[in-house]
Amino acid sequence: MFYLKHKGKKLYIESDNVYTTCPQCGKEHAVDLNDAIIDGVLDLYGLDIFCTECSAKRRASGGSSPQVAAGCRNSPQTAASWEYDA
Image (cartoon, rainbow, N blue to C red; front, side, top):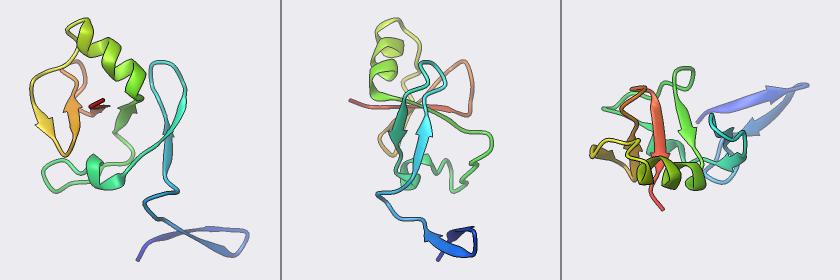
């Protein structure tokens, strides 16, 4: 079990309380950390996850590769950027 500590209080990391910001538009959105595991590795420091809207725009403009892992698409521009499938 993993958790954060804030002012001595444990904040448990669960599927409904993990968020990030889109590297393109800055929108805050929920993230399932299971989707962020790439080849058995979870790199929280080197990973960007685009929101659904920016992911769709990037795919429409040819900005993603066909590689799909755990419901996300790897961006060809940065190996550590992921886009959510809509």
